[in-house]
Length: 170
Image 1 (cartoon, one colour):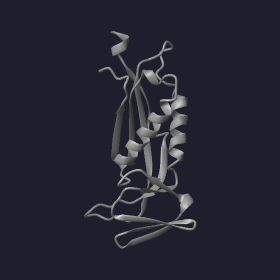
Image 2: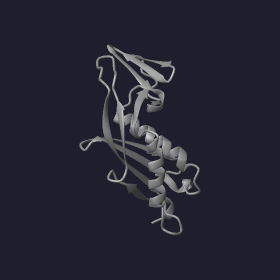
Image 3: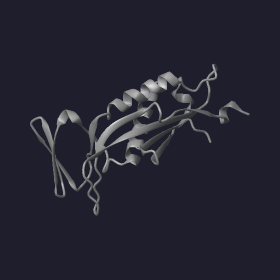
Image 4: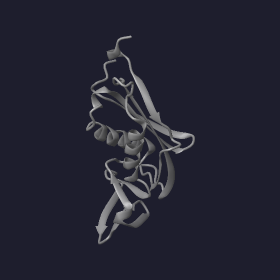
């Protein structure tokens, strides 16, 4: 088989990667209260192997994933683009209003995400994009063909997001 058209993948499973965070969902017809999850995370990197028969070192990938997840772990995750929600900064707190709900949360306990809702699908996309940004800085980036981020909200609810890189030839 031609090396240029073959690929392998490596993955880190949900057993070793996780974070805890609070969120809520808001839409035109639905308004959810603030609640939390213990999210489980998986990542798969597809690519061609180097001369040492490796795509990426597991330990490097696990450390990178842990660093990225720390940005969300034990925070309240708030969407920045939801038309039903208002965010107001008041001294050390963020005041969040939507529908009949009002929350005042210390700023250092909140992460505002670039999205309309903090769904599991959104978190998988944002995680994939964060990992892609970090992996692009590495010398093996040209061998990476795709990155798939998976987030489990519960053991039976999960969302996957796949980013295909420019090096994908198929």
